[in-house]
Image 1 (tube, rainbow, N blue to C red):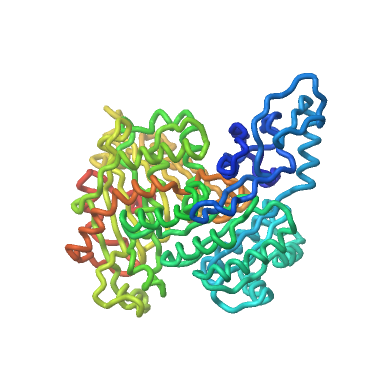
Image 2 (cartoon, rainbow, N blue to C red):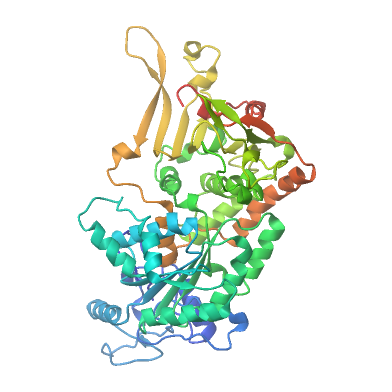
Length: 602
């Protein structure tokens, strides 16, 4: 059975379909866990008709059932000498003719196209207003959402449907293109948006939401997506109430969980254990929006579909890899949240480590979600736990420049004056496997720095016996090739090469082979949340984090975080708007590395 999705919005190669399940309730609940497939890829013997698997009233622990669209079908062997539509057995038809099969599927789609209900829990918060609702509108604008969809906002704030629509309308833009039907599309989208006020720990309030969802679903198969845009301390209460009172009875139910996923290994494991009291693992979509960024998703394409890169992707040719994240502003009112986590938990343990895992993984068996995530887990488990000697932490201080005084981190009213929380961190990590043995992976992340950027820099080894060494003098780093993948802003991929300057002499120059996205592609790059929301609706888990990935990631950073806090390590102070602590340069120099973002031709 296929999950039906917009084919004009994006295209995928069909993934192999699993065989039909038995008619038991437990098997039926697993149908929704399959990979997304196209209608044409469904085996003819597995055509589902109007037979639905209804959630058992006695299901254990009140778990949400992630049941596929149209629910359940059992395996049947095609019967010879039978005409199509003559036999109906266990919800399956034997259809030997592909033409008749396609006609039957089309008939069933038109009659029983499912409804998708998207509930944004925490709808009055900044993330919902600035990212989630605009991303949903962008998907609607591009005709990527299912025909029968409804968006519900859920929060404690008292609000009417009209007030929600007014709030949402202020953040919607037709940035995708300038077609004349923008205002018309916006009006159509807002008519699909509704609001329900309730407490996050109230089963009664979620039951009221369930009634409203059923009214909008109009008796169709109901698929429900809950986006938890709320603080982590109320995740479990909301999931429990949604599970017991508002989960789908005949379709799939999925939950998107925002970071932070705990503060360390213990709290993360406790959160996962609590979520799994009400959800199956493949109903949990742990979102890291950096994995939805265009250049991060392009990383595996660049490596695995270009012969010139894959043979070089190892310790034999790569001298070091740098993952750099910097923001040119401070906490700006988020100090209360940030002080509880710090830059290591907020950026390094998730965003940068996920990019590292994608960069360093072995070639997966296929592009299926589990195959990719399996390889990422192998990388994380091969890494050495971080040592304090391989880490530098910093905190920005006040600085006056051009007559303007920029505040220190502790000047934020929501931050304790004696806070030691790092706003900057640099670390050297190592992967102990055959491909990457001895190659330093340098991470750097900070706030209130000179520039805003996120990039991956791959510095290659020096050319052995280089004939032109004398042209570079003693600075051999100038002769080093470097591949730069700029994730944001101004997305680009460029390769630094050595080149002869035109003229009669032999003067060498460092030049860039540059793929600048804005110059090469006229279409604006979608926001990461658009891609990840569409993936969650379609059941594509490739860009979401699995629980064992999370465990492996926390295992790397938890010992370091505990040591920093127990020893009360004082961060190195750096001026607001500077390049960061000097200690970061010494850390890189220890491994004979120079940070690539400080070069004259960066």
